[in-house]
Amino acid sequence: QVLFLVAMSRPSSAAMESGVTRGACLLTSRIIDVAEEVSTQMQAHKEVVQRVESLSSSSEMSELVAAQQHRADLCASFVRKQQGTDILRRKVATLREGIAGRRERLAERARQLEDRRERYSRCSRGYQSIRSRMSQALQQHSVEKAALRMQQRMVYGRRITLLHELNEIFPIRRSEGAGYSKIRAICLPKTDVLKNRDPREAEDFAIGLGLVAHALQMLSKYLSVPLRWRVLCVASRSGLEDRSGPGAVEHWPLYHLRQADGRRFDGGVDHLAQAVLQLAHTVAGKPTSPPRNNAGSIDLLEGLHRVFFTYLHHVDG
Image (cartoon, rainbow, N blue to C red; front, side):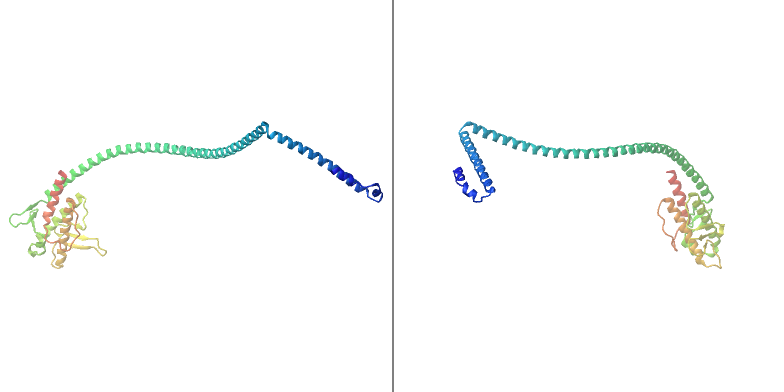
């Protein structure tokens, strides 16, 4: 039909002669060629359709479809395996990075452990050195301790000897008649009686107080007990000095002067009594009380006797 139409549409010799250009002829020939090509393609399409129809009813088509499905499954499986491989590769890379980090940390710990071992070895050597020095020091200490004990025993023995000799120099006895204690056969009453003294007995009391002051000073020296007041031993003209105040030195006499104020003598007796009590409490290991202006009624000789008795029995024990 197409060929017929094309044939019918060819120009006549009269038309060609009437002025149709050469281009129209070329276009017509091109249309004829296209028509022939279309006809050829339509024939090929019919053949393909017939072949497909013949294949659809046969087993080859099913095999082809199965092969295509199997191929598609293989492709999907390959894609899944490839994805899994990529995931595993990323995991392996992460694990490798972690292993590298752990190796670095292990190397750092190894260096720290090496440093600690070196410090431990130094400390161990220092400990051994200190231990050897300590053992030597302990041995030296035991030797020095034994020597110190020996010296202490010698000092105690020397003190006992001196106290016995001092007790013989200043013997303290109790008088049966008057009830007063005596030092070297000189009666010395308690402090309240001394303050209310009889002027006729003032000289005897001054001698007794001087002996007490002398014995107190020697006991303080032998027993290494410092006193608050400085004792001035001048026989019957003894006294005490107080150097602890901010002003001038105060002198407290242990003798009676007719021209002097009697309160100075009373203060000297009180200070002497406080010094005797301080020495007695120190030797007995008791706390000493602060000094008072009025010491009350105190037996000075009884206090000195207590010092002798306490120290000698304490050392003997």
